[in-house]
Amino acid sequence: MHNHYYSFMALNLARERVAEAERERLAYASHRGPSLVTRIRRAVARAAVAVARAADHATLERNASAT
Image 1 (cartoon, one colour):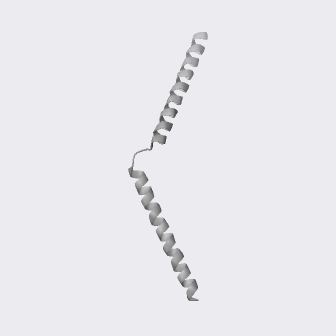
Image 2 (cartoon, rainbow, N blue to C red):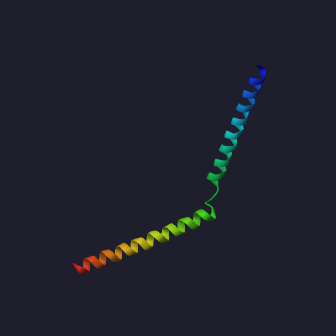
Image 3 (cartoon, rainbow, N blue to C red):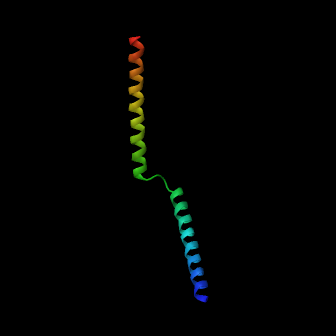
């Protein structure tokens, strides 16, 4: 009977420690700046949007002048 109680207590303590570690990890991640990979992804995405907008603008101008 006591073994089940101590097993439960050990599992509960482990769960609390995991939750505390996860909170600390998230707090650390939120305070540091974006990683290099994130900055590169943002730059690539912004460049892709700029290219798409330029292509759309050129298509609209071509269609407007054809009319």
